[in-house]
Image 1 (tube, protein in one colour):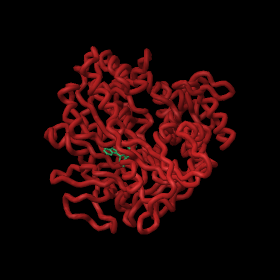
Image 2 (cartoon, helix red, strand yellow):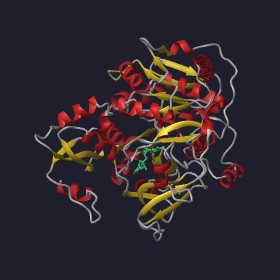
Image 3 (cartoon, protein in one colour):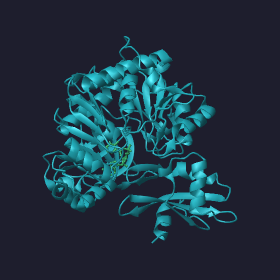
Image 4 (cartoon, protein in one colour):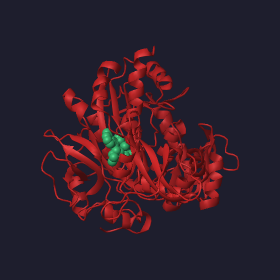
Amino acid sequence: METLTGPLAGFTPWPDDLAERYIAEGYWGDTVLGDVLRGGDPRATALVAGDERLTYAELDRRADRAAAGFLRLGVRGGDRVVVQLPNTVAFAVVFLALVRIGAAPVLALPAHRRSEISYLCELAEAVAYVVPDVHGGFDYRELAREVVAATGVPHVVVDGDAAEFTPLASLDAEPVPYERPDPASVGVFLLSGGTTGLPKLIPRTHRDYVYNVEASADVCGFTDRTVYLVVLPVAHNFALACPGVLGVWARGGTVVLAPSGSPDEAFPLIERERVTACAVVPPIALLWLDAASWSGEDLSSLELLQVGGAKLAAERAAQVPGTLGCKLQQVFGMAEGLLNYTRLDDPAELVEISQGRPLSPADEIRVVDSEGRDVPPGEVGELLTRGPYTLRGYYRAPEHNARSFTPDGFYRTGDLVRVLPSGHLVVEGREKDQINRGGDKVSAEELEGHLLAHPAVHDAAVVGVPDPVMGERTCAFLIVRGEAPTLREIKEFLKERGVAAYKFPDRIEVTDAFPRTPVGKVSKRTLLARLG
Ligand code: J2J
C-alpha cells in the first residue's frame, strides 16, 4: 500500500478506486470535524459541565477564539497535539479549536502516565501537550515536567493554574481567519487498545470520522431533543463519536459531562438535566442495574442506554429495559473503525444475545479460520473488516501493519465472532493477546515488558482471568529470581515507571516454569487453567 510523504507521512490512505466509490455513494462528504456543531440552534444548549452551560453560539465562539490562540502559539495545520483532558469544557473547546485549524489532537486518556504520554509525544512528534492542572487528585503539571524532560515537547498548555507553562486561558484570542483542512486529511488520532509492546495510533480522517458520527447519530435516533450524558472518558471513541458528543452536536442536542459513571454522580444529573441517552461499559451497566432499585432519583427521561467496550452478559442485558426503563443498545466497536449496533427496532432477543450488526452498508465483513479461510456461515472465526471508516494502517507502524492487515486491506480485529442469520454478530472471544478489563484494554506484551524490567522478575506472562463484574481481571504469572516481589511492590514499581494504573495486574502468581505450546510459545490457556 502506498504511504504518503509530507504532512501525511505515516498515514495509509484508502486505494483510489474505493475512495472514489465512498464519495460517489455519499459516504464521504466535504464536512470537516470543526463544522459538526455549526448546524445547531445558536441559542440551544450545546454543553453542560458542572455549573457551566454553553449555548451553541458560545461554544462555537470559544472554539474560534482558542483556534486563534493555538495559531498564535505557533500550532499549524498538519501538526499533532497530545490532548489529555478529562470530561470538562476545556476538552470540548480544545478539540474543536484544533480540528478547525487542521491540527490533529492525539487523544490520550486521563489515566495515562509518563510511559504512555512520552511515547505518544515522540511518535506523533507533538508540537504541544494539553493537560488539566490537577484532576482526580493527580497533578498533571508534574507529569508534564517529566514528559518535557523526556521528549522536549515544545509547548505545554494547562487548563487552570499553569505554573511555568502556558495557561489555556491565555489562548483566548480574537478570532482570525484560518485555512479549512482538507476533508481527506487526518482530523484526529485515536489510541488503539494495543496488542504489542507499544500502543498504536489510529489516524481518522475528517471525512471518515464525520461519516462515523453522522451514520451513528442516524442509527441511534439522535435529534435536537437528545440530552446525552458522558460518563466514559470523552476522549474515548465510544463517548466521542459513536454517536457520542460529536453525534449530539451534529443533531443540535445537548451534551452533559459527568466526572464518572458512579450512580452517585450520574443519577442526579440524569434527573436534573432530563438525560435521554448515555453510553456505558458493562461494569457501569451492572452498577446502574443494582443502584436503580434503591436510588431515589427519577430516571424516567432515559430512553437509550448504549452498552459496549466489552461483552454484556445476555441475562444482564435482558434486565436493562425493565430495571432502568429504557431501551438497550449493544455496541461492539473499536477505535480502528468498524461499529456494530443493535438497532432500536430489533426484537428483544437479538438485542440481548448479540453485539449488533455493522453500521454501514459499505462495511465489509469476513469471518476466517486460523488459515485465513472463510468459515461456514454461523461458525466462529476471526473477524476481518474494511470499509469507509475503518483504518487502512496504523500511524507510522509499517511492520505492525503488515501483520494487522490482509494484503487486500482488511483489518484483522483479533476478535472471535459468529454471524447470525440476521447479520448480527455475537462476540465469542478474542485471539489477540489483550486483556479487556471492563472495557479498558491492556496489552499483555506491553505489561510483560514492564514487568521484565523488575530486577526480581526473570520472566512474565500476563493473562485475563474471568471476573463477574469486570469481565476479566489481569493476572501476571512471574518466574522470579531470589525473593518474589509482592503485588504491592509490583504496582509501586509500575507506578514508578509511569505506567497507567488500569494496566496494573490485579493479581500475581509465582511459578517455576511456563507451559509451552507445541511451537514453543507460552501457553496462556494452560496458565489460566491452573488458576482453576
Ligand atoms: C465484546 N467486546 C467488545 C462488545 C468492544 C464503541 C464501543 C466500544 C468501543 C471500544 C468503541 C465490545 N463486546 N460489545 O471504540 O466506539 C472489544 C473488542 C474490540 C475492542 C475495541 C466504540 N465492544 N469490544 O471498546 O478500541 O475486542 O473500542 O476489538 O477500546 O473492544 O476496543 P476500543
